[in-house]
Image (cartoon, rainbow, N blue to C red; front, side, top):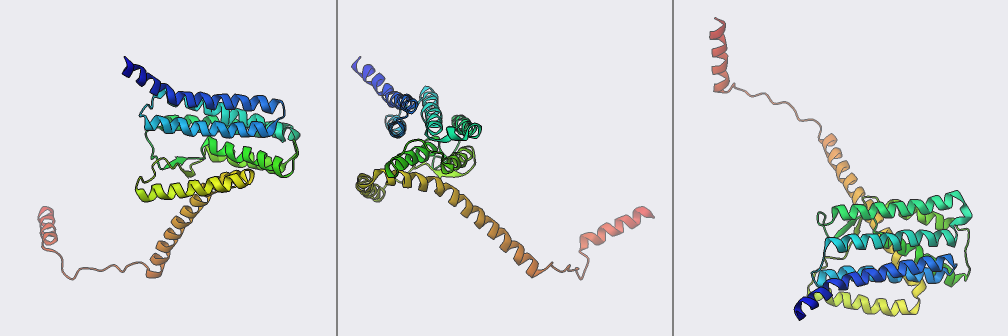
Amino acid sequence: MKKIGLRRGIYILPNLFTTGNLFFGFFSIIRSINEDFVAAAWAILFAGVCDFLDGRVARLTKTQSEFGLEYDSLVDLSSFGLATSILMYKFGLFYFSRIGWAACFLYFACSALRLARFNVQAGNVEKKHFQGLPVPGAASLLVTYVILYSHVLGGGPTESYLVLAMVFFVAPLMVSNVAYRSFKSLDRSPRTHFLVLVFVVVGVFVLASAPQIVLFVISLVYVLTGVLETIFRSHSKIKSFADVMKHFFQAGPKELVMPDEIPPYEEEEEEKQKEMLQ
């Protein structure tokens, strides 16, 4: 009985982190309504931490389930889709009237489409890359900008064309075919573990020194990395095709070489045709 109870507890553990994600998303909406934008933005980041942990715990304990997948996607839509849309609208997009709420709805709709596509493709795609910008990644770029803006300028809502442009930029990326690294299938060699440990130590030190700036820079780099890698791969393919065509036109068409003698089997065919005509 104790083993059964322990096993049930292990199955519940990932869903507890998912519920924590849901709580922080709900808390962010309340803070946005009360115009406490920094707290709302931090709540979404904490929701991202819970989202990372629920998947990691589920894989480590081998308790992945279809229920967990669906529950996680619904919660992600709530925290990184709806809560983030409300935050950005209250933070400054309401100044743009119809364009502002249309941008927020576009972001929310793309979040839903991205998560639906992820659920459909779960288990059928490679684990090294995501197809399209992950919803938490899009949300992190927007909310870390809110934190950075409030830290640097110390202001509240603002009519910012940069915020509007960022929303219109990340929304299509979520439903695009741009590949983003997932970091789920890292090499488990001792060398990789050592490098990860070094990055974590350095990251914690840098993050502690200027968290508002560092978090935004990390989010921005991740979003741009997928775009730049896609452009680089496309450029490489175009260059390879251009080199092939250049070689073809420089070499010119090959001359048609006629055989000196007709092969024996062709002579036999000609004789048979002559006999049939006679």
